[in-house]
Image (cartoon, rainbow, N blue to C red; front, side, top):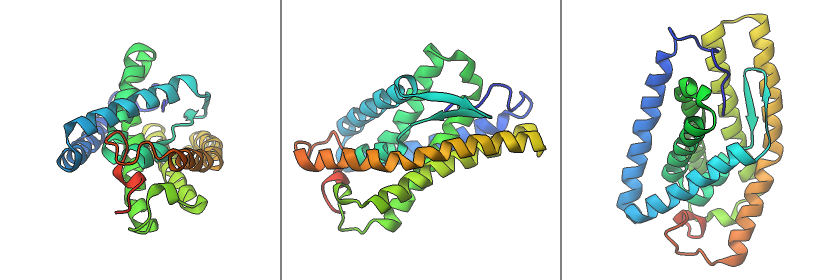
Amino acid sequence: MHIEPNLVEAGKIWLSYVTAAGVGAYTLKLAAQAIGERGVFSLLARTVTATALVFSFFELLPHYPVGVSEVHLILGSTLFLLLGAAPAAAGLALGLLIQSLFFAPFDLPQYGMNITTLLVPLFAVATLAKRIIAPNTPYVELSYRQALGLSTAFQAGIVAWVAFWAFYGQGFTAENAMSILTFGSAYMTVVTLEPLLDLAVLAGAKATHRLRGSTLVERRLYQAA
């Protein structure tokens, strides 16, 4: 996630610190709950896995600049289904921070905006999952429609937050609106691919069963709530 440098000028960027602090505090709350449910080791192991995957997504998978940001295949819903909300959120934050520190330092001023743009949609996915997935359904049994709903929520949330930052930073001009529309149109193409990847990963997990009961994956992956 790379919102363009200077999209939001220095005098306005304070808002990103506030929103980042908010999602950070909520992530800590989820982490505390995860520790209470499955212990520190499970949370740390899943967070390390999520961080490595996120870093790989940003650095190795195709990405290209479009309009006000870059189009990435982030696979946020996949991280949520496999590892849980708290590890996925921490992994997104840490993976993005590592990339910014060592490979893209020009992104550091935008870190608050970028992390807000990633984590709020992830939390929306976690909320949506409770609504569209029956309590007696493990994640390996998800349908394409359910995977599509989660993926669409994540990607649409990213586009909405990028649009917010762009309008906040550059105003409601025709040029800015067109740049946002171009980005949004390109980004939503990811929605056609991510649910298929979600289902492929879940099918692999279902076929092997080697991780059933493991502290290295989300408990709901195999066990109904």
